[in-house]
View 1: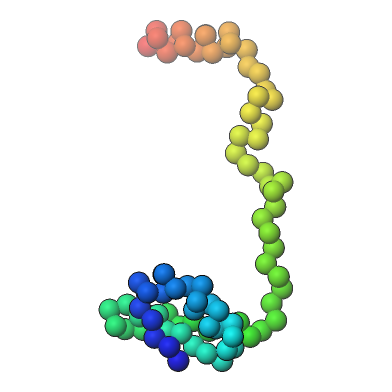
View 2 (view 1 turned 120 degrees about the vertical axis):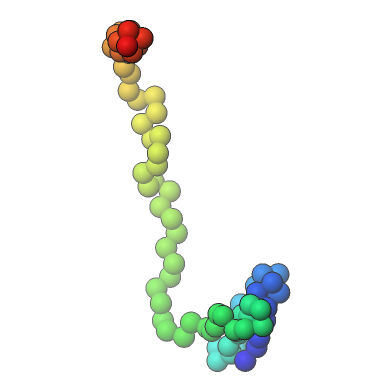
Length: 84
């Protein structure tokens, strides 16, 4: 069992993860104002691998430049707005 302040844990996260990896039964408690608030342990169950993000996912702006609009339509709208 190990107690580490959150401020120190921010700087030593890789060391804490390695500590937990080396000893699967170890526990690390992160403290805030000298009170434990987070318990870190090793994952002991067999989980599937983490999937990488799909680079082909839909993104905003994917249709940029694929559509054209008639400028006369917008000119007519502009004239209506100015007339108000």
